Length: 80
Image (cartoon, rainbow, N blue to C red; front, side, top):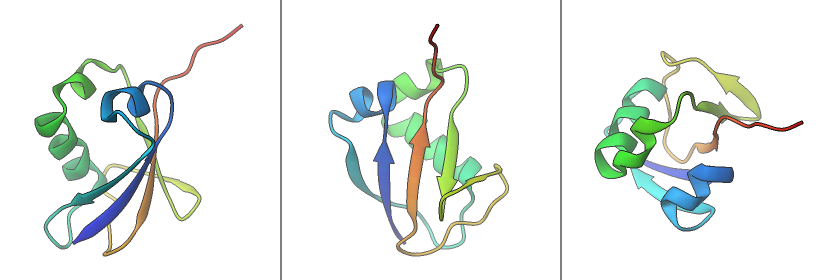
């Protein structure tokens, strides 16, 4: 299945751009997407936490993704 990834912050820096088409097997979860991203972009493994939003809502690791989902990757943020 095809997903559209939207990346912010350091996640955007790792991809080299803010949007990316990404393929996964049908019926995979957010956790499986995270693992696939780490395999393709090992720098993701160094991030303390990543949040994923689908349909404008944060999703847990067990959330099942669907064809053409738009997945927003939100890296850890810091500020003052």
